Length: 121
Image (cartoon, rainbow, N blue to C red; front, side, top):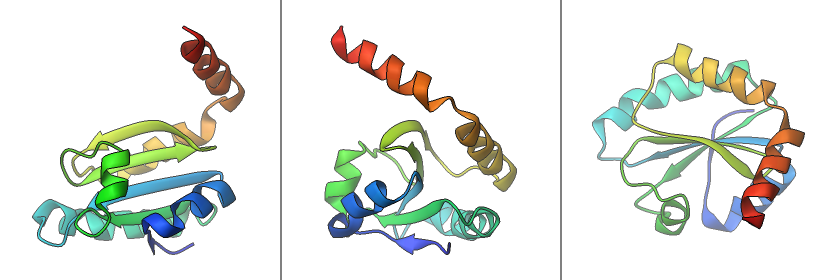
């Protein structure tokens, strides 16, 4: 799947219809964001089963606030509607791919169990 430009209006449908979504929060004026954009797109070509979503923080302030984005670029990895990893700052393509491999290897049953236990406390 190609990289999509995600808006708040499409957010719920996107995370409901897709098991894994990786968000790149960015802005047009951000130099590191512009440098990271091609890396994000190149890696997205290798994982067609994952949704790679770019979120312009200037246009989608509600989403940026929801994810508590304080600096850009910020990457957020979501699986089964759970944020499992967030990273401020651009990362190299190999680090992005390693993060994706770890995301794919997660035991989501355990993640859901741990989350439920944490919410009970």
